[in-house]
Picture 1 (spheres, rainbow, N blue to C red):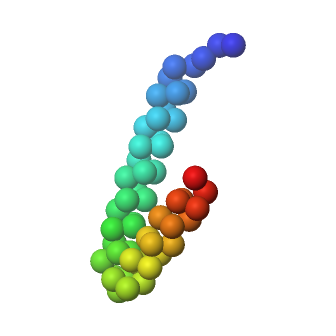
Picture 2 (picture 1 turned 180 degrees about the vertical axis):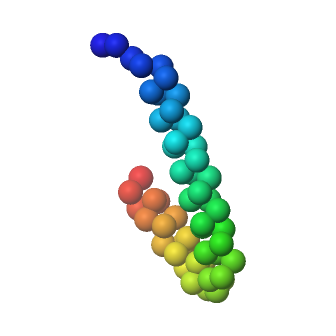
Length: 53
């Protein structure tokens, strides 16, 4: 199997940019969303992770 290092490099850069974009959007969402709403969602997410393990 031949690996194209340039292609992997481009995918890595794209992935990194997408992650940064997601973080920016999520931070903005947290800023405009009441604490009660986003903290409940975090609790549900964390609880679901514990139930799966």
